Length: 135
Image (cartoon, rainbow, N blue to C red; front, side):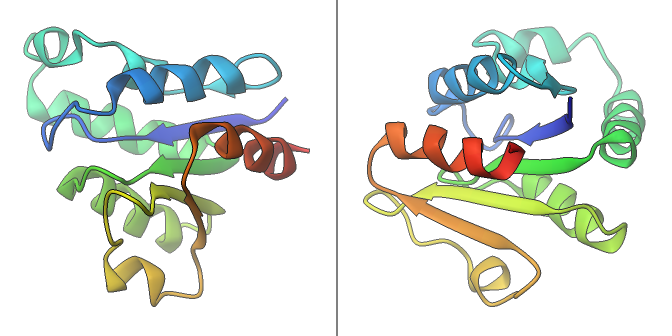
């Protein structure tokens, strides 16, 4: 079983929270998602009980523990960008998904050959790609 660090926007916007939850549930059928809380629709309310330093330390520990990073980046997020840069620095494989019908991904991601970029037009194609990543 792989340990997956799933990244998705929190403070940058929760418009895709239901998609995050679907992806997390799918991954959990075969592997461990260290950041399963990202799919919680009430996450903004829950995280208010933690200090920012606690959130940072916990997320960095999970990144170090993970085997792979899977990020859904349709909704831009400074935090997800930071997590991806950190994951690259420590050598974690990074897979970035985004809905090509809704956004253009930053050149800082698409121009970096380290990242595996997976544009999609329908959510179902995400799951086929995740199967390949986690095989």
